[in-house]
Each structure stands twice: as C-alpha cells, then as structure tokens.
Image (cartoon, rainbow, N blue to C red; front, side, top):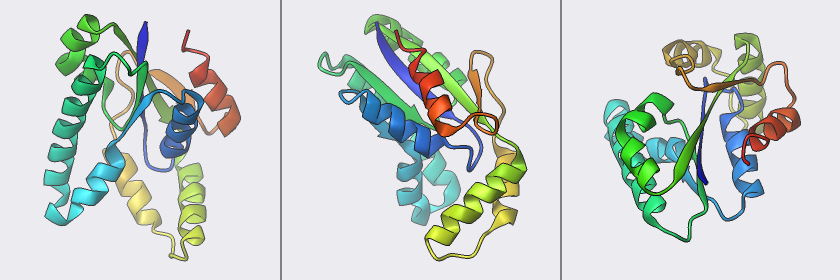
Length: 166
C-alpha cells in the first residue's frame, strides 16, 4: 500500500514544520508544497492563486501516483474531502491510501508561534492576520485524524503521524 499523507490546519499550527519532518523521514516520498505555490502566485491575486494552486496540486498528485517509482506522497494544505472527491479513482487505481491529518492548536499558541516566526525574519508580528486567516480555515473533514499541536510537542505529533504509516 502506498500513502498520500495530507496535512492541513490553521495558520501557525505546525503544518510546514510537520510536513517537512514527515517528508524527510520518508525520504523517497514526493512532496507537494501547495503553500509555496500559492505564495509564488500571489502577484496574480489571492483568489486566483488559490484556484490555480489547487488545480496544479491535483494534477501533480495524479501524475505522481502514476509513477511506479514514487512510494508515497506528502502534501500540505489540501482538504481531504476534496482529495477523496477528485482523486478517489486514481488512489484506488494506483494503490494509494489517504492518510489525512488536521492540526489544531489554541489561537493564543498560534499567536506565539507567528510572533516568533516573524521576529526570526526581523518583521513585526501581525496577530490580526493570524486571527483573520484562522477564522477562514475550515475545521477537520469527516475522515481527518486530528492532531492537537497545542498539547503535543512537535516530536510527539511527528511520531503520531509517522505511526499511522504501516
């Protein structure tokens, strides 16, 4: 069985950190970095960047699943309901199982993480953006495995996610 590991969650919940750790752990897995695609497309406008990056991610996932040399895929910021709706045929055809993880953490912790991250870059914190963006992020999908990064250390969350891969 091959795995499509999907990690979603609100801003500053640990998505990028955990996605990178999981991808490094499964060194032969492909990694589709949708947030980086969206950032690169932002000059075209936020809405169009979201649409194009989603379509491109679906296309990339299908092509990667077809490749017999790819033992698994890690993807960030794709709703698992959408993956199941649009890619269920391909997942079945190419022997993939979706492992959907949704990260959560208290808003106060998101503030702390975003403040630290922006301080590292020499930028002032934008806590208003954290609250606004997190309010727009949908909660976990029906089949998502919820990981509370507010209660777990990153190492624990990483072990929990990796432990689901058999």
